[in-house]
Image 1 (cartoon, rainbow, N blue to C red):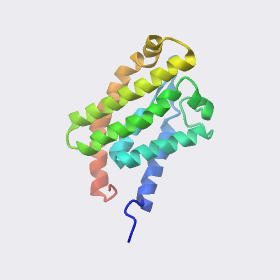
Image 2 (cartoon, rainbow, N blue to C red; image 1 turned 90 degrees about the vertical axis):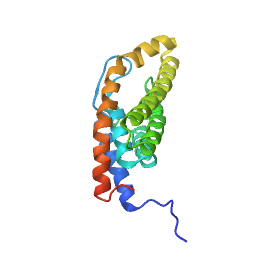
Image 3 (cartoon, one colour; image 1 turned 180 degrees about the vertical axis):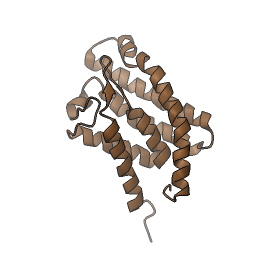
Length: 183
């Protein structure tokens, strides 16, 4: 009897490709205080559309592990466990849940852009919660100050990233399906 949970070489390759894309784009950031603006969440949304919930989430976790072991793939070309334990570590962990929640909606409602938008928004809110809580704890600042520094400046950009993903993602998924690369 064959194990149906086993990933194919093609699936592993697609995960590796999206992990590599995240590693290339993740370091580019715009420092605006304690928390920089990065493209990481945009790449995660695209990975979910491209790979689906499970493989897209795995792709991000592999990226996170690559950064934790010290390769400079996090914002500002940084890496290492200290980054995870630092002020932005909660966002890095929160992205796992963002990928999972976004993927749940994208996989279930792939033909309904508004539902995918809602899923990505909910996932982003969970990331904000993890990130803000950790930022307040590590920086020893009140939650409302962490919220002002770690959420408010990012809302417009994150909405744009979600909208962009909602437009590009379905097209990427459709092309992967047509090419026989989406399972």
